[in-house]
Amino acid sequence: MRRAERLFQIAQYLRGRRLTTAHQLSEWLAVSERTIYRDIRDLSLSGVPIEGEAGVGYRVKAGYDLQPLMFSTDEIEAMVTGMRMVQAWGGPQLAASSAAALAKITLALPREKRDFVEATPLFAPDFHIDPLHGERLETIRQAIGKQNKLLLDYVDAKQQATCRTIWPLALYFWGGGWSIAAWCETRSDFRSFRLDRISTLHIVDCYSSVSGRRLADFVREMKKNIDYS
Image 1 (cartoon, rainbow, N blue to C red):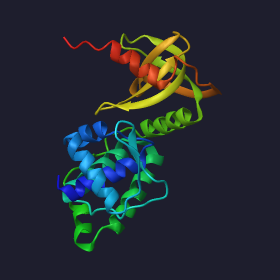
Image 2 (image 1 turned 90 degrees about the vertical axis):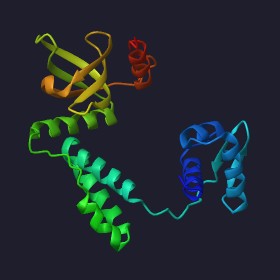
Image 3 (image 1 turned 180 degrees about the vertical axis):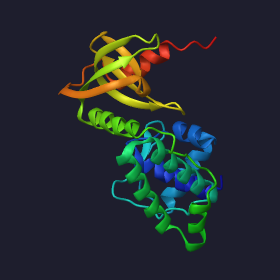
């Protein structure tokens, strides 16, 4: 990474967080903490309003904006590929939003790079995906945002039918399908539910965030069960 790009990245990280330490920046950008301290000093001298101190963390003063660096061809290809995947697997609303976002990004590019967006030879075909999948994904996504419980008719890995009431916490994409991370009222524990094993689902009443049943708690429990042997 060129130094100009690194300086821009540092400024962007400092704009997007409350406080960021030099140690965090050094890990994200794969350089030494000494280099980060020098870069922060140079950014400050150039007029970027950086607040904070060593050992505590840094941030850019609210309201400050930067002119973005131009996207490289690799960055364009990464964005196009990601948005094509969202359009294929993300449900109707996310697909429409992804297409709109890509159109805005394309208009912001110089003319010589706009053609590269269409020419990116990485695709995510959607003709093999059941349209019902996208509708269910959208229902689940909205339920997560509104903290609605879901009532599922579900077929587990042993092909046994079961009815579950869950608190949906997040959606995970595994490269070939989605799973719901949830607190299961029926089992009084965290569970994951594959979308392709759901026969029907209905939104029911709301739930309130409770310590021990949040997404962070789910992730913590999943990490405990990982076998690295």
